[in-house]
Image (tube, rainbow, N blue to C red; front, side, top):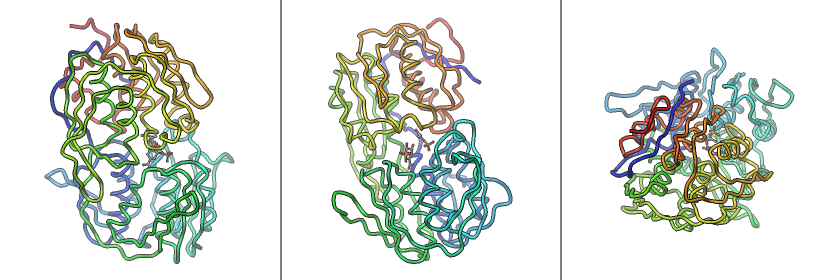
Length: 444
Ligand SMILES: O=C(O)C1=C[C@@H](OP(=O)(O)O)[C@@H](O)[C@H](O)C1
Ligand SMILES: C=C(OP(=O)(O)O)C(=O)O
């Protein structure tokens, strides 16, 4: 494991670009695989989670390569054209990759085994195996439906109507992908809106998809077995990754940065609304639309912050940003209350207990709840902690951000996990004025 230490930063200044959006990158490889012909993807995230999905798509028959210009080329096999993989699909650390690809293979005549690292192997899969069983697929593995699991797909699936019991774009997307190779109309009913990248990508590829009100909910209906042809895709940069430099700049005195070309899909921007409510000087410039997704540049300047109560219904639009919001809250005047977050306990780590343990070790006042946490901010945070990351990239980046503004350096036990979603994090942050090193050294 590579320990990384983050020391007090200088004012963060300059322009930067974070890597491509992880959610859209997974989906672009999958959709390219389902289309006939060659699709070109620009801006793909080259993080481990997405590279594992690329490997899985190759094993299912796609020809995928990176060209000299850094774009990715996918020659697909068409809906219904997936092959039987020779070996198990190792989805690494990625819940999105595992759940979406399970949906994809559930309605094929193939038998596919899914494996993952220790973190992924402890995450719940029943949330996808339940609806996929309704199509006719069956699953073999541990009783509690954790990985490793073998999916026996169904050759003649039946369309389903399914109300998703948890707010989860992964579950919704697994069903929508299974629906593509199912004759007739499959409907997913969503009680709480979640990120809609799959729906937008379906529209981009010309899939027949209807999104309509269903009482207080939303019904998403897909007509199966379309013939898809290749499309070019442009992946915006990831608003979840951009949240790290945003909060680093907000808490580091004198900072003024511009983060270019960030995805601004409204189902992803809850963190920015929350930071503005906290008094953060965060503004959007040059707003535009690219391939059905809105993008903008984000200007962030150092700001004194105030604690807030985050509305619970905002959670799906910022679900991955609570660890880094905890860092902003640590420096805010008063209390920040984050509740309704049971889902955080089943991410790469139990993000509630892991954040609480790390924050307490660094001298932050935090109270743990079953469904979240309350943080009372301070003008100075002692730091000086060694934090366990539990194979969780967002925990690692959050605590390295804390070290930029705390009195003593903060060290994470495993910096390598950052590669899953944000390759180049350390160099990018150091280029702005951060001071992240391999081991604890006296700050220069
Ligand atoms: O669909 C996606 O791309 C994702 C959905 C979210 O998970 P859930 O569907 O479990 O909420 C999110 O936490 C994850 O990082 C990416
Ligand atoms: C939860 C996350 O990803 P996944 O579920 O794909 O592992 C994340 O990136 O924070």
